[in-house]
Image (cartoon, rainbow, N blue to C red; front, side, top):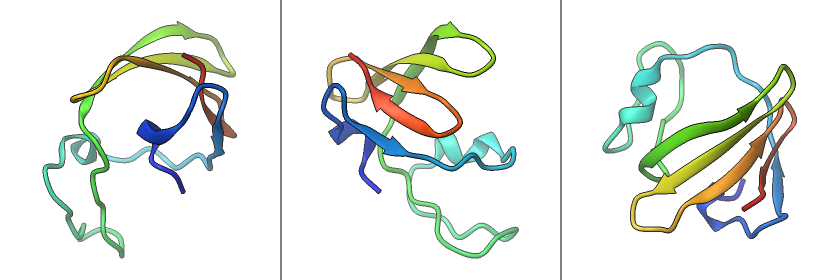
Length: 84
């Protein structure tokens, strides 16, 4: 798995949809071992995102990673691709 911040425009990573999970993971400051599942949840980066385009099969996100210029990503059930 590659850190999404490191993707070049046109580069994509394959993804696997997860069942709905708690939004608390999006606000992590440090690695955490959840009580409900095995493993370690580690935050990769912090930032803000807004949906630029959305339909039933895809969405385009504008992400402002903390400390980086904005980036845009195409997200589908199968891929996560940097498009801008």
